[in-house]
Image 1 (tube, rainbow, N blue to C red):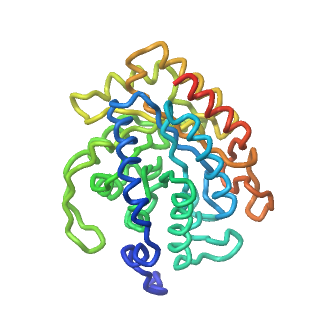
Image 2 (spheres, rainbow, N blue to C red):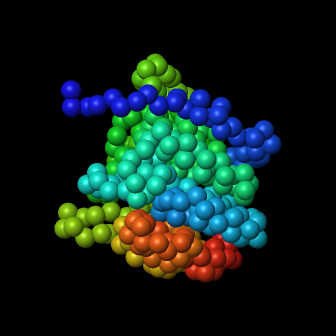
Image 3 (cartoon, rainbow, N blue to C red):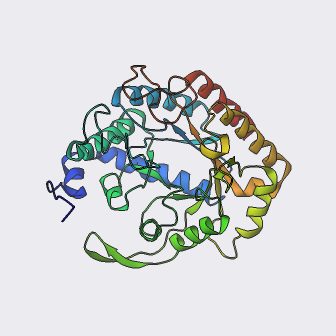
Length: 342
């Protein structure tokens, strides 16, 4: 065999038992989840803001960022429900390089998945315990989400995963909202098919079990732009695109039609400062169209302590080692501006 079985890792239940979420935070999460659900159902006029580093690479700077974000979130709580991005898995276009905290708890060292499963749990727990905010992560590996099931308030299924059957089936059974991104090629139909599949009851094999789900009515769209056949990136947040999406993505076929605008990636061409302009353009569209206002329920923004990015081992505290982000000063100003216009 070309696959070497190196060691048996702890199952998620054992890691959760070893590193439990305190009882008082379990109670708080019920209320937090209810707020997020109400926004996506259109029962709460606030907007979601899923914001934070492209990748959660080191515990000290991520906690520093999250604590600042929590203080800021409190000042805008009447307009925004803020969910910190704590993304611990990174998809790699060519499959090599830094893959996130799960694989590389030390970004400059070799893979260590045993320490990695503990490191992702520890980081999410510390953010929750020190801020009172529950977290978002990407479901890159569907069988791994259970390591974090009790702390996550939001899951994203990425552009490279959204066509995968296992992601769609598992999304139908998770207890939190799942944002299904449009694929890298931009197909709206693929994204909507994924949302529809995630909203239906499903039966499948999961971790050697036959499981049945009830469907996830909070599966929804995330628009992140796309790459055309000419190799050029194209945005999909403009007024006309949102209008066309609203025509196809209706309550007659889907539960709780909702879209989150991912302001980086191919929407910005990975130019992070454009995220500020994109947020304002979408807010303009929402102010001009009740249909778009009902559809768009929030934003994703990539943000860290320091503008830009650096290579692994670059040495700048609080600067991304993957995609470039806006720094804290721009973040604070943008969050306040969104809240003023929400």
